[in-house]
Image 1 (cartoon, one colour):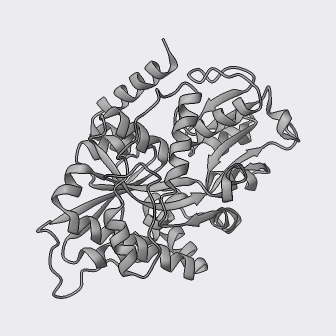
Image 2 (cartoon, rainbow, N blue to C red):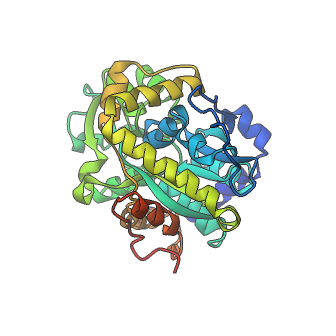
Length: 367
């Protein structure tokens, strides 16, 4: 079976899982509201909505959402419309929740955004904003791997078949002239698809020799004695590439543009606050991680992880197109038509009103 067909079949299986099962796996669990997320006196509902359901991951690369929740930015902009939250561990489950209308808007990586858009024939979602760049590293066991060429023949983890980091690593492998079967992960390098939650334990046990992973997993591996062999940012022009963007259900965007605008206002405000107050923002993100997962990150993990991420309103659309090309090259995706995947109209309205530079869809926007 061709890799692309197998991948589509795997996505279909994932999509068939009921949300109850996803919740049991830690997907779609409710995030705790914080004391800062109170509804202002006299506030009114937006678009007559009782709530807006927002999804995000418990990763520092989703720091805009973490800070937005913890500091109450979303609730402030939504007024008497309740901001409700769901946390996810993987892109396919968040796309399924979006399609099932269990969430309205979500923070998510580029690969699941592309897959969700392509699978639906361009009808399920729109990317409406940027959130973060960077925060992805190749961390290895320095006793086994001392240079990039030593990666050949080793076992390297990525979070999931076809996810953003998996595609990036497969592309890097191909650039070295090495061969790996994308579906099985076998070849000149053994790619071991491993949940980020257990990757540090797999590294400690010696079952993997390294991992190409987002923060904070990368810094957790460094805290266990791993060494950063490569920062993915070094492979991109200007050291910028999309790692997290904001998506919305197309029907929700059409029916409730004021609610979408409120969330985007909160996102822009959160990014502004993060960049002006990096230490306080780092603490707020960590506090929300603790609220969501029951465990805060230690300083030796949190500090280097946070430094490697850039928070931006720009979706870096040209890099999303490049990431799609990488997935095609790896055999994980047929050449997609991404025309119209972006609708940055509302974001640019918000940015202009805030005196910020507007952003571009790199030819992939809604006409």
